[in-house]
Length: 79
Image (cartoon, rainbow, N blue to C red; front, side, top):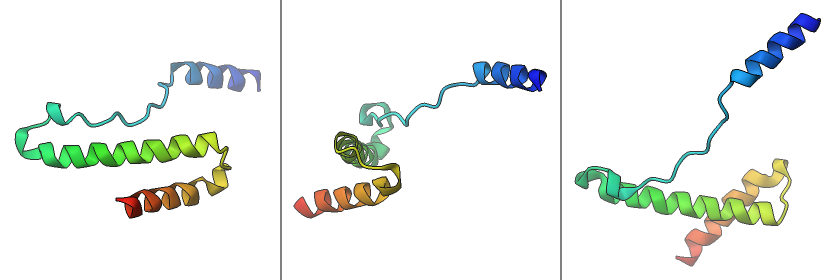
């Protein structure tokens, strides 16, 4: 049992940390894809803003998806 714990600890120490998806930079893509990159960046910023609101309001993990969907719908309705 002790060996299993040691092996698990070693495996976890070498695991790379999970990173979030970086924001798209429209200036680093080919000109023909720039418009799509700008739209993707705007969507990423809206999603990030809703996620920050969810964190500030301390939304439970089980309710987070519904909250984010509602937030994104409300932002789309405002535009």
